[in-house]
Image (cartoon, rainbow, N blue to C red; front, side, top):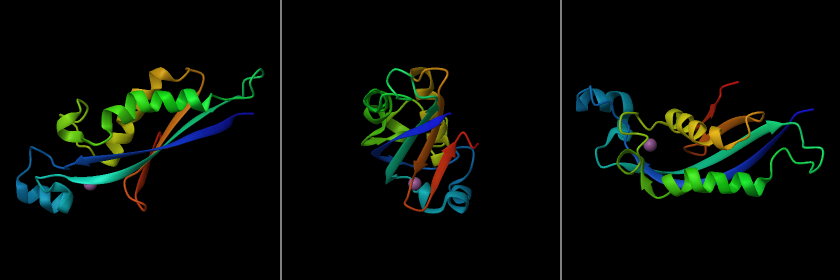
Length: 136
Ligand code: NI
């Protein structure tokens, strides 16, 4: 009887993909234009899905206003209009790929969602490229 409920949010952020252990040439081979040193931006679409049994009193799996507030405070206020590499603590030593951004967002949000509820992150980096965590 589990139901999945989702909240869609949006943030803009800049990043640069590179591995500091590699030469500029190797970084360009692997990450192409995403490795340009002066960064580039994306319009990220974030879908946060919470799955569980609807509460018998409210009929809610989770109050969407509460979920929206948690995402705003802990993700959007930290990432929106920021340089992910330089302005956030999360990507000092982690390449800010969509995969890693989704993992970071999951880890940020997980303590704020009741433990009996499942949490899934879907992150669109472009209209055509998106990642999901957990994978199943
Ligand atoms: Ni990029």
